[in-house]
Image (tube, rainbow, N blue to C red; front, side):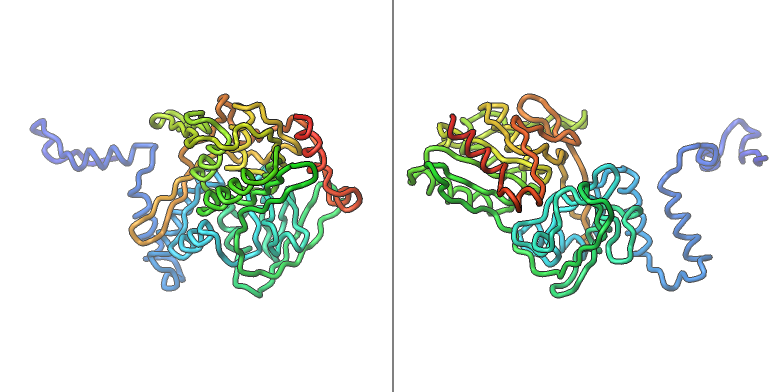
Length: 380
């Protein structure tokens, strides 16, 4: 089948031919295969003139990341990378909802407070079946988010399946400029400081510090920390905020790298000025990522009770790697463990006091979860 290697008669071998033979016989493909494929497309594909090498390379990069079967590891071409960086800096155009994958379905983690998504009635746990006329079952998380986002003033129609609804239905949303809110607070009733933390953006540490100092200088004796519908954000911000409640050196979270290097431990820093305040934390299925880290750390170290619903279970760490052409790879590098070694990923946090609340109950009876949290913190 193969010609005798040149020089074989005198007992020598042609190294290049042997390497080629080895590659041919190997069952494992190499990256040379990508070059071969691109060459075939350029020479044979009927519409190759409409496809640039950039399109092919970016498509290959998306496929490589897709092979990881991890919805949070994605390749972003330069324009998408730019949009992502604008979002994490606290401002972008779209509907204002955190989207994730649950049971292989595109799922709303939480709508942001005051966003078009919230105002339109979109809720945590909603399954998105269609985005306009595009079915979502074959879309990656990255592709779906890109379609949902768009210029201010434009409309997107989402087909939704909701647990408590018999049939799927449509929600029409007008996109807007989204400014991610961070925090609100007020004194409720009997000297209870109610703090609603909406997102862990870059400036959330400073915003929380401002509110914390106001609480210290007020007549508040107890705190209800509301992390409901908080989809997370920067890990470092969650660690900073934990330092207001935990003593210096207490573990906030551990990054488990699955054997690819030493696990990284993040610990509280500062003088914990809120450590002596009785606290209750509100969570629901829209509480994810950094919210789960903060809630898990405070419960593990201080026995702080969680009130509400089971959290989303987004407990993986993504690292942003910038590439030479200003594209980026956002890749999962670790999973988060609470101080007691419990994995957040897919498991979520189960509240100590479960209080389910639908929109119908809220409309008829008010915020039962918040009312219960206030009752509990007053007993501490």
